[in-house]
Length: 293
Image 1 (cartoon, helix red, strand yellow):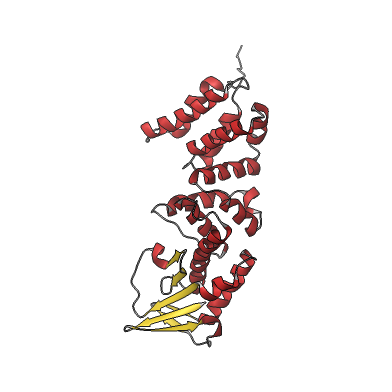
Image 2 (cartoon, rainbow, N blue to C red; image 1 turned 30 degrees about the horizontal axis):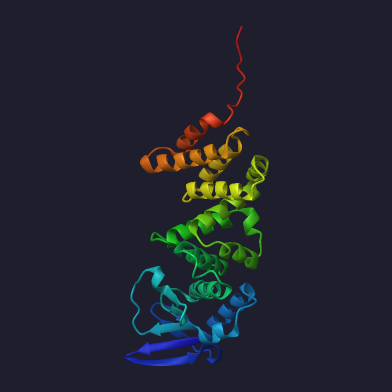
């Protein structure tokens, strides 16, 4: 890990892991470069046991400038497949900067494991946010693709079936998908496993055709792309209560109708839209009436 010091048009490069223990002040924060490097190494090698030695030695640079401007969090670090990762000191304290370093290293390892080039921006950032959160850094975002990535990762981590997995297994699950739709499908899958909503069993009874199942799950993920967990529960519970003789084509049509009505009437109650679209296909619950004498 290298520390690049810039001041007055001059620059100096220091090997952080061989640096002395003198503090370095950048903006309002004070760092101890060797300690900072040690924290990054311990976390990175635990999270990715197959981390190539050259990544930390040659492709991670911490940069300190004599003037620190207030910038967006997205400017705290950067990653380039060609040159590696840069973390700007002065934006976060030492522990926060460790989280930013893990965020950028996650991009590096995503590239190393394959899938980075084929993934959309939401998946790339979700992978990185999974890593920074493992390091203890929690951020919220308003800009895309960071906002959607953060929302989906937060949903995944709130589900017991996902959160109890080790980091390498959670990492493997997230990098196995390449699109935001794939991430939404992953959330639906772990929601069903965590809360036993019956989606997997219902699909098994509905059809043995894997392609048909995949088509239906993809449409479910597309419909629920930006849903909260509460709305995902409503949607899945309605779907699994559909009459068993309902054709798959009709179920796909219902999911498309929900998405269409949601776009057309964005201010309407989405749960009511879901209930309305499923009404013809879901058996009505029996009600018991008490008659007075």
